[in-house]
Image (cartoon, rainbow, N blue to C red; front, side):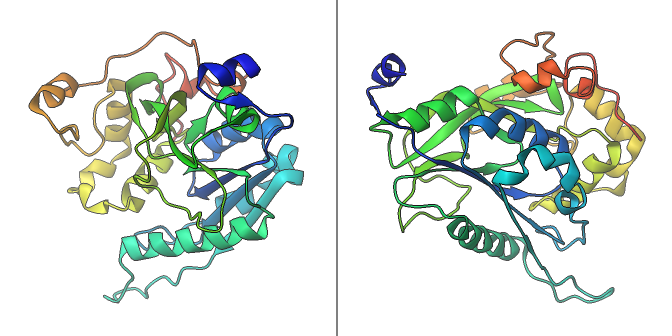
Length: 297
C-alpha cells in the first residue's frame, strides 16, 4: 500500500485504521447485500438504521429486520437499530414534513454510530445503501495517513442496473476521520473528493413493487404527478428503455449538459469494473447486469 498511498500524496500507516460503514436503510436489500459482501473483510462495524415509515410518512416494513438471516454472514459486525416514526391516522392532515423526518433519521444514526464504539481517528463512511464504495477505496482509507478529515467519494452513477451508466456525478457519499464533531450528513461538506471511488446504483430493484414504493417514498414525492406513473407495465417499459420514471428533464445546470442527457440512457454491454460479488453471482443478480431489464411482478 505504500506506493498507492504515495501516489495520492499520503503515507502508509504501520497498522490499519478501523472503518465504520454507516447507512440509512430503506428497502434496498439486494444492493445492501452486495455492499456488505464487498466491504465485509475491510470494515470493523456495519452500522445500519431503519424506520417503520418513509421520509414522506408512508408506513413500511422493517425489511432489514425481517431478512436478518440473509445477512447472517455479517452478523458479528452489524450494529442495527430501528427508528419508530409516528404515522398519521387515515384522513389526518397532521404529519411531519419529509425533511424533518430525515433530520430525525440523521440524529438517530449519529447516536447509533457512537454506541457502536467508534473512536477518534477511525474512518466513518456515510452513504445511502446503494452508494457502494469499492474495496480498493476502503483499503486506501484504512492504510494511508494524510487522508483529509472529510472527503467526498465520487461514484459512478447508474440507474435501474449496471446496464445504464449515467455519469460520474455521484458525490454525496463521504469518508470522515472521526472526531467528536463528526455528524451524519448527505450533503456537501467539503471541496475535496476522491475520484473513481465506487458505484451508485439508483432504483436498482428486483421487483416492480419496489420501484413503485420508492417513487412514493421519495423525499421529493411530488415528482409522482400522476397515478399512472405507478402502473407496473409503465414502470417495466421505462426501466427497459432507460427512460425517466418521473417523466422529468435531467437535473443539470447548463443547457449543454441538459441536451446531452435528454432521452433514454445509452446502454452499456460491459460488465467490467463492477462489484466482484455481483459478477461472481451473475445469475442470481442478472437483473442488475446488461440484458436483464425484466423485473419480477
